Structures are given as structure tokens and as C-alpha cells.
Image 1 (cartoon, rainbow, N blue to C red):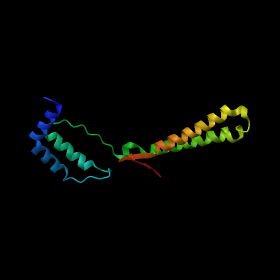
Image 2: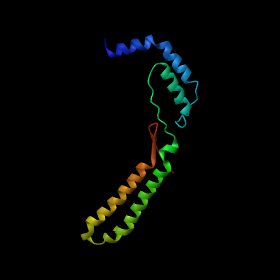
Image 3: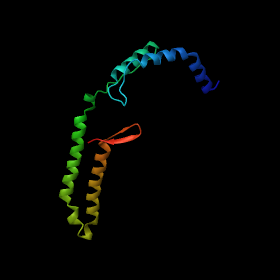
Image 4: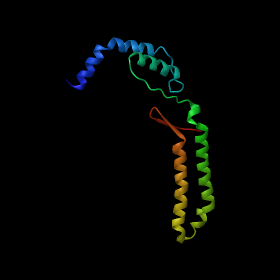
Amino acid sequence: MTLTKTIGEFVDREFARETAFLAELVKVPSDNPPGDCAAHAGRARQLLEQLGLAVEAHDVAAAQLHFADALAAIFSLVDAANKHYQVTQPWHLAKDPANAAAVASALEFVLEGLHLTRKLNKDAHAGQTRYRS
């Protein structure tokens, strides 16, 4: 028996139970786009456990994500890049061709800092990227 046939037979055999499961699940409101879906997730867990499945729950409350700490780290990175740029002063170094390696290094550091800042300061959702302001 092929996997496709096995899955198809399972879906046919369990269709009434699957429909009842989904009917119960959609009775609980959830945020769309995603936000606070704790009630919906809790109901899904109850229903899955009633089916005899082991469910592992993870609390991803905003408080546990330490958003303020992450934002502080981003600003610290920006500050460090800015200080490095001020200390190395590539605009002065660039006047002497002998300093080409030092200029390249200073610019690479600043550009990498900007790149990381931009990477860390955005969210991907539904195939779109949104930058935090």
C-alpha cells in the first residue's frame, strides 16, 4: 500500500472526527494576523489530548522574548559602529592611498553594523518584510 493511499484511507475513515475537531477549534477566536492566540492554542491542545496525542506547549509571551533587551542590543551595536567610524575617521584616511586597507576595514565594519542592524530590526510575516520603527 502506498503512503498516498494510506493517508487517503485514514482521511476517509476519520473524516467525521476531523470535521468535529475543526468545528470545535474554529469556535475559539484567534488573532489573524498572528498576535495573542493563547486561547486558541489552549483549545487545540485540549482537543489533541482528547485524541490521545501528547502535546508540548511553549509559552511565547512577549515578556519572555525580552524585546527591550534585544532592542537595547541593536542600539548598542549602532553606537559601537558609530564610535568606530568616528575613531577611524575613514574620510581622513582616504586622502592617503597608503591607508587603503585601513579605509576598507573601517568601511566594512560600519557597513556590517548597518547590515546587522537592518537584519535584526525587521519581521517577516506572510511573505512580506516589515521594518520596525
